[in-house]
Image (cartoon, rainbow, N blue to C red; front, side):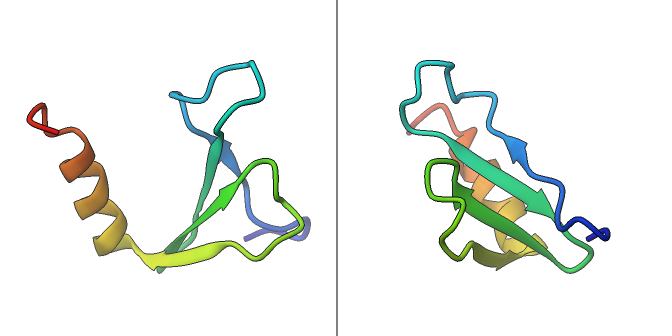
Length: 63
């Protein structure tokens, strides 16, 4: 995190149409996840290991 807060990255699957958008902010020991339409609400914090497992699972073509 820097002086202005975490650096948020919008999902590449989020389109420009204002639909379902997810943003993540990688930190040293966690990854923050939030809805880009609710940036005033608290973010979900998950461990980096949990985030890596989620990304691996979401890339599974059987899903």
